[in-house]
Amino acid sequence: MSVIKGDFIDNLPKVYGLYTGGFVVFILLMAILEQAGVSADTIGILFVAFTVLIYAGIGWLSRTMQVDAYYVAGRQVPALFNGMATAADWMSGASFVAMAGGIYFGGHGYVAFVVGWTGGYVLVASLMAPYLRKFGCYTVPDFIGTRYGGNLARFLAVLVLVIASFTYVTAQINATGTIASRALQIPFEVGVWFGLLGILLCSMLGGMRAVTWTQVAQYIVLIIAYVVPVIWMSNKQGFGLIPQFVYGDAIMRITELETLHGVGTAPAEKIAGLAVLTKAHSVAGSTFAAKWQFATLVLCMMAGTASLPHILMRYFTTPSVKAARQSVAWSLLFIFLLLHRPGAGDIYQTAAA
Amino acid sequence: MDQSTRESHWAKTKGLMITTLIIWFIFSYLVHWFADSLNNVTFIGFPLGYYMAAQGSLIVFVVLIFWFARRQHSIDVEHGVAEDE
Image (cartoon, rainbow over all chains, first blue to last red; front, side, top):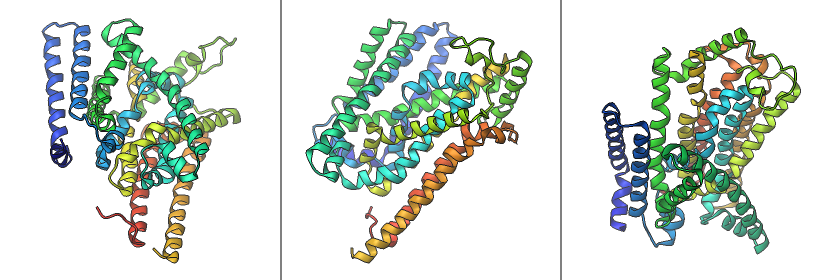
């Protein structure tokens, strides 16, 4: 395996290029099947099965017993690919299930989440990742214990990590169950177990090595899955093929429609959930309360992003401190490619309505 | 590495860090505080305040981190602490 390892790292673009090609072929195959009359449900199941199989395969190929490889992928992951993996890791439950709809309904105020999530990476790059990587530890509590000395610091770090991670995992598994039950037409509870099984397959045998290489593959799937529908939709609505910069017109159209339909006037009585229908989309609040709300939400998201233990750990896998910094930059770029278009999809739907 | 090199390295690193954080602060908080006024300006079809939150700040962050990584690396090289790759 170690011989292949050396060649593997050198051949990364080729390997993942082949993988991307294979995935595109698969998509075309699904398109053919759809034309042939295969039901959408079946195609959905095929997609899930195919991708999970690939990830499990990569997980199997990356199996290892070496401590270095299991915990930090042998510190051999180049900055760019590490960035892809981190982006795929970070773009998880909320991005799939909540973000697009949230922005659509919440308007400007909700976009504070996006500003916060991305700005947090600036903190990671300048304050956290390089120093963590330099220390050469395996985990964040490891770093805290070594840096600050004593078992109390280490114990507290572990405590915080467990609480943060447990909260995070709960939300993720919830999202996994929701998505699996939708995609596979199975009950939520079964979806949860299915998701857990998939995760186990991908990560148990190979640890961080398996996780990293699997997630590079996942990022490729993610970016195609996010980008193609939005381009397609934007094209259908007559906004052309590069929606990102053009969706300003869609926003304007929404504003027009909103005025037409009287959206933006406060409701006579407060009914829960009604706010989404009465708030204008791109209007930014002028009250101190609204501004404060935006700023504190941003702060909260940034502090959170910058301290996510499983994200900080992703920079341990790079070959050097310089690579760690670059990797943060690549992570944010790859996240940006996915994140700056979520509202776009829904906006096109509204503008068309 | 002797003391003066170490001090110089840290001084420059700190300076870069503070510069980065100032830019970060402007585009994380300052710009968005005035989003309502900015919304009166149109930028490539978007109300500017909304645009800054949805894309503008994000682009700044990406560029900022790439620039930061590059600058920090040259500081490291200058003081002889860059790793050999």
